[in-house]
Length: 254
Image (cartoon, rainbow, N blue to C red; front, top):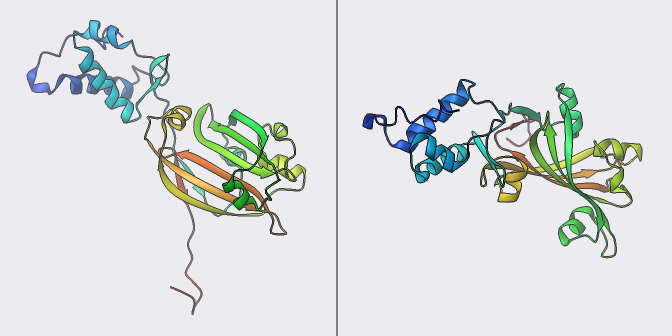
């Protein structure tokens, strides 16, 4: 670490602004493995003392690397080398759960639970689930992870007839619903671009304002009743969504 933040080499005016020199030096250390995912960087004042650069210069270099997703900052803990995320391709033609997706890829999926509760529905839930004003909903909020890396935030709402005890969901929501004969057999999904709020970005270990994908899913039972209303936020740097397109039947719309 002392060698990485040595003052040597910062005195060449042809190398560009000092913050860019430091930024390139840290980026190169990450690319060559001298800084590994999860490694912590010294505090800003310590880096300034080691390099002889001003704290303004240090801050500018670090902020640029945080904005690019190469470093991550945790409030009260410091600055760390971000985990490398393998991009995943997700087919939109299959109605599967996150747990099933990860198992199919041979990866270990788990959840960081944020809340499991029963509450009065908000207007959005009443409309999506077709509830009455006196009905209540089961709510699940969690961060979905693969091999310890956060990939998505999932917020699901379900009628109590489908899930009377939200605490019963330990891993897969669909497995819990299937055990009750309440698993959806079809769904409508809407996907839109989103910039992550500071809270959501912190949960997904990306910079605030980073690109994400917002997916709204409404799941239906065989008899047409709505059983699931889920809003998910996926990391934009981790997912590609793919769908197969076929030529319309002759005489159909172009």
